[in-house]
Image 1 (cartoon, rainbow, N blue to C red):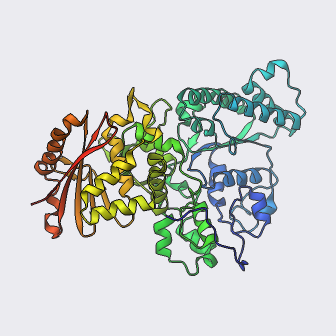
Image 2 (cartoon, rainbow, N blue to C red):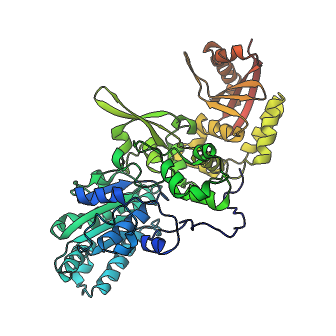
Image 3 (cartoon, one colour):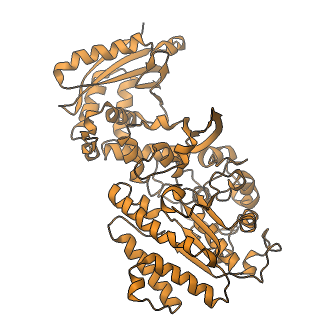
Length: 539
């Protein structure tokens, strides 16, 4: 995969400007930029309810939507000309807007959150000439309540609109530090708790974030937020539909293969009639004229890989997975479901909703090629820490294609010398290095290539094999075992090969008229490396 950071030299544009990087609605509208009109959905929100919560992945347009709400309530009519809401809104009614955002800041250290909150409150107090007493300085929530009351009073008792963007960033930034994450959650709970106390002075609340654990943790006591994250009516509130792409961006679609665009960038679903595109990825495609992993060009968040490994879940097991609704939308720092974490972060999307007995389930999968390529490439880097590169992969797959299994073994052994530092972490007091799982990930990452068809844990009637590779008109079936030391090596090799044969892992491939290779690999806990191998042909 080529570097996603590369951009082709820009030619002079004869069309409108792409809204890349615009998170301010007023700035976007004053420039000659494309704009996808979401104000019909906005109008429905502001006319049928008061308090809303929306979860969407990063770079999906949440901040721009919040900015649009801000301009609407401030009565900036000229910005909405030619948009759906223009002749449907009472522009004589204006409300003061209080906007709270934790975007663009880092919350990895113990006092980061408190310092940011206090700095934010001081800015507001200076803006509205509110004297901060010693008592108020001790309570961020009390200070926020005082500010809301003051804004309400000085605006002729016009109720305040509160917009909260990226409410959960202080928690997500600290996910790898459980104590700090819980501390930040507690701080936010107290800070946001004042919104309930200020209800008489509030006209409208809109909260955005990545995770969905608002009602059960951070917004405890303020449980009348309407969560529209999985409401089919608002499924396209962020992102672009195919219709919007064809209508608004028609000049940009020239010379592009629409089917290829869909394969790479479409596929996100929140139970609506249409799937949507991530705006950042598709706009970068239009800008650079190249299919790359633009949404994640600055990398996949490390905590996603940490949780994947610590829960012993193979990456491809996330494909086509079935998850109960309460596990998907619930999200607790102490008990995070990996599938929920990946869905809410945008790496999985909804394929289907179904009922089984008294429960609702969702079927999930990777939304598109951009996400899948980004995730797999990032997992390789995380697991291998520089040990896996294109040259290494080319040699390893070449040995496999030419049936040079001794060289395959030697090459894998060399790569595993000096194990990655991530593997020194503990899971339940035991090193990752004691788990066959980590070696299977390393093997998968070593072989991963668009030219190989890799099937991890292929199911048969009697069980699942660890890895199946279809390559060079051949079938390679791998079974991995862990041994305490070299003394157990032969026993483990016998067990692995016997398992492949007795459980019929090769049976689905007998009619392919292709050689079927049975390969047993044994890894040693003491040696922290591969220690032996065995190869046989399926007969």
